[in-house]
Image 1: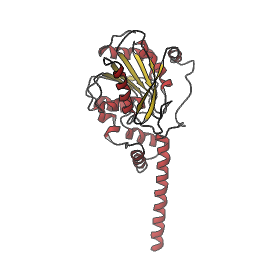
Image 2 (image 1 turned 180 degrees about the horizontal axis):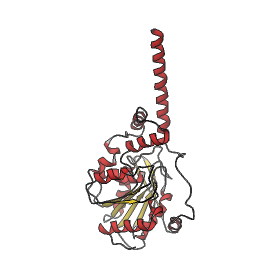
Image 3 (image 1 turned 180 degrees about the vertical axis):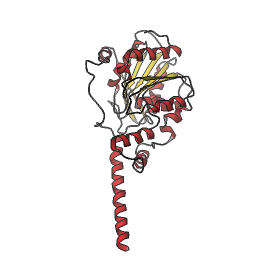
Image 4 (image 1 turned 90 degrees about the horizontal axis):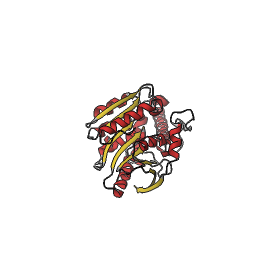
Length: 312
């Protein structure tokens, strides 16, 4: 009996140790800054519908701006509009991305007559930080950039645009007391919550259940990054329940990284004016590339309804 008990305790200890070790490994994969094997970092090929947009954007005059927030030095590109305006689009990139990956989106808003601000999120690009925030910490930086714009022009009228994790960032920001200068939001392929997305990825990428691993990784995140995956502040759905701003929701019907059904939950949650555009056949973060003309028209029409004329 004693031998059986010792064996059981030894086995349990081994399993616990293995689980904890796995948790720290997956926390590193999920949140520690660095290259990720599952993220495609290939340059845009010349055959892409977005290649020329990126080349055109590179020719624009741009400044590198700097702010300090949460003890971090954060960097962004700022591209002024061609004509005088109070309109600025803040464009937020996705997981393990950078401002350079958003050049085609920057060109879109530049053509619409906006000033364009394109930050590198904390722990991305040339901004400081070691831990990826999944939008939970990034929303604080987004608001800091917003306040910087307002400090230079109190009449600023600001739109938030986000892609993937950037989309989650702009949706999560609606839980905060946003300045009245923020007028509308466009989110492209954002997830419903950090918990939902990482639960999905644990199963899809590794065949792992939520329990116990995700609970353990979430606890590590709480200790290291200051947030757990299942808290309300990490949920776009919960955040949007407080939102009254107009939102355009965009998602590809073939998205298998952030499942398409997530956009329906986000769309249902918001309390302000809302529009939903599903891009047929588009995979994750590929809606602009899949239907560039439709994307331009949809964004321009949405903005025309909420205070800015369609100039395309």
